Image (cartoon, rainbow, N blue to C red; front, side):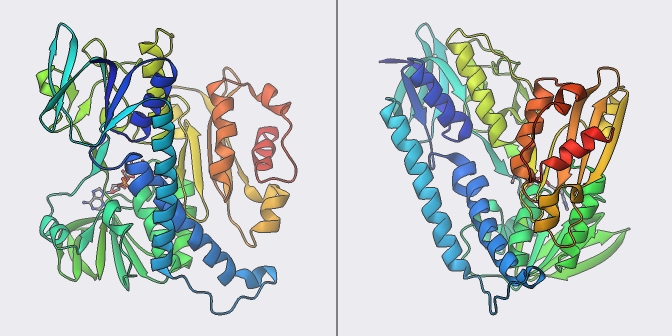
Length: 454
Ligand code: NAI
């Protein structure tokens, strides 16, 4: 049998592409070597959100006295949180499986390897069988980087160092957790373990946390977590991990911090090794598969979506890329736009952003005006955030009077940001946004205030 499409990888890019392609009438075969749902569902986005929701409940209860609520002896049973996480993951991955089955997608749970192109299409082998399809979609995702720092590989093998995968299954609570890398994973995990009682220390190479989030917002987030007891060692390069300790350099001087466990969260790399991409002569940029705006590689009919192309390693980017790729397979014109991809850090408070920052706009030569407004302009924020220091920052293209960037730190930011995504993606002008009616009272009204203060 010749399939219309073979997909390698069943994460957000792969399973969504399978659903859309099957819905569009293609005969689809999906290979998954671990679990359908990929990193996002099994060991990333969803598991961390179940953890962080429990932490949020505990934080709310513990600090309830600011709101006239007294709950003594609040405690988090971490093993129960892990069990609930497993239940949530099972429900969601089960849902995806049934959906794929209902659409007639065949799933093979095995490691797939690309063999060659012939007159009929592309050959892919798995467990001694060979399958053929007219088109291929590479959606094999990414893996956590385990860096070649002294002792890291050994301590990872010994279970002392963990990546996002292992930490989400750990049922005990480390007394001292050291997080290497103050990016998205590092901050979300630091936030959770801080809430449930670990002494958390972050060691970050750069002088700022949160990767490319706005610098002022990064400072506010850091201040919030310093108050909660997290220790930040910024501008510090890890030099070695030994049993019970992490060593690092600050201004050329050696320091060390004790640890019961260590989380490695220094980034991810496209999982393109061992797929057989070289058999098709697929053009690569280091580990990343090079794709165009239709998500096509240099080989006709071979597409690559999600983390494997290394463009923006986020599940929601993968979803949209998958749709663009499938639309092009189905003969529907579609192109990927990376202009308005939102980013969220699910800390407490949350950070969310989309589009340009003042600095990135200026670097591109765009003449901008930026306005920063306290979230306290929104009544609901004041009602729900005693002493809250959240802000919203908007960046406007002066020439066209269009909104091109929004950055905020406040709870609900993760849910508010999509409105901003729509405004930026659709190129709304400030005058058009002024006519949008926001629900009252909501935290989102701070955006409206910022717009009217320009
Ligand atoms: P990241 O790229 O966000 O952060 C890694 C951090 O580690 C950087 O700040 C970097 O400066 C630092 N670093 C690198 N080498 C270091 C060293 N030797 N010593 C100290 N610090 C070092 O990577 P992260 O947090 O591992 O996340 C991986 C991917 O997962 C990202 O692409 C992220 O977008 C995605 N993700 C997204 C989430 C979300 O959208 N909420 C949640 C979790 C992950």
